[in-house]
Image (cartoon, rainbow, N blue to C red):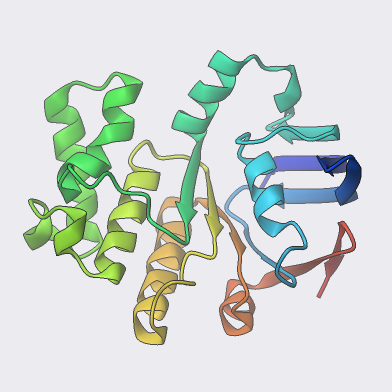
Length: 225
């Protein structure tokens, strides 16, 4: 394995009614290709903030985030947008599917944005929906899918461009235990079969234990468990 992601002295602060709130305080992290990592911690400690920074949805106040040795803060917005679309897959607690698009169209969307031809995008999306057990539901819009099915669509959408990193923020938090375990198994299968690195922020300690490597975000820093 080689180093995929490096974080050095990462700091993030917000200002609320004139008061500075320091969320991340000199955080360090290394992630290898294909590695699985669980980030645990109390609500409000900054797990989502950290994932957003790792995925370049937000910028740090200071410090470095390097992807394959390349400093993310040195990239302009166009380059960051390309990076997010191509190299990182996002899975959130709420699926954020487009309600007027069916399952197939939702999964195709990142590929079409990337410039794929329609038939190529359709074929890739069909293959993924079959892989996640939704071959018979491709024409259904999100409102006609169960919560677990919606999250499966979101997972398929996150990997259609074959990213090397999936960032999942409480991906099972809005699901019942059985459906949550199905999503866990799906993420693990993608990690093992496609070699994707997987970073999951979760309150679910059992899920975190299954992931393997665990760190706790506390007082703005990461501590091994």
